[in-house]
Image: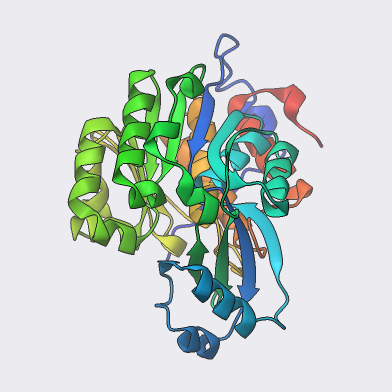
Length: 358
């Protein structure tokens, strides 16, 4: 039996409209840093996935030859293209909810790169994009009938982002820097980015990205978190790979190494811990079609609420709602009416009546 988060109704608004209102509070600005990837979403069978040969639920880096083989295998399968990348999805969520957000990444001088830049702008994210001579990166997302995702990533231009591309000027004016763990593929890059963000006064947020990323870089990630990171996001598999503990013990362990730790446990919700303060946030009831981006949108909802001055429980609830809604669609781009719903709940929590749309 799971605990579920009960969404507030519109009528509840009038009882709490000014509960969290602080007219002097200034919303923080969030900068994302990660792989600029266009997601290619394919719905496949369990047999198709076994034939490709990648472990279910894994994140796999592929070369141009493997990319061509996968594309040829699924040439007749309907494809859904969206601008993605973990950190990009997170800051796009923040921007859609009314926050100020920007994204640093690297793209190619091609149509995919042009599409990527335009999509950031369309989603109100300021593009701080560098350009490479390589082709723009893409991520083939193989979605099985249970909604589980297996990632096959061709990095291309995204992997051409290096430590020397990190400039302290890019961090000026931002309060939170959110970095995706996938950048751990380049130790110099991710450490330079985290160190620079910290030196420029940012609160540093890190998503652990994937259990195999954690397994392959375990001690290095521990050192990074200890030195630079304030907020850690992990799912159950990632937290186990990092701590070898169950979720509730794991969130305590990770919170002992940073300021705020979040461990997401799927249909059982999430655990949020800061010091001695522990919250279990129940999941919302969802019809899971595709879990692509659920963790990214959870982080986006959480960080948006945090940047808006909400308490930890409210932050976890906004993250939960965003994640619960995105699993009901294919891809990571929620329809306008769903964003309106989440904005309305944020406004209820915040107490800004003028942002509600009845």
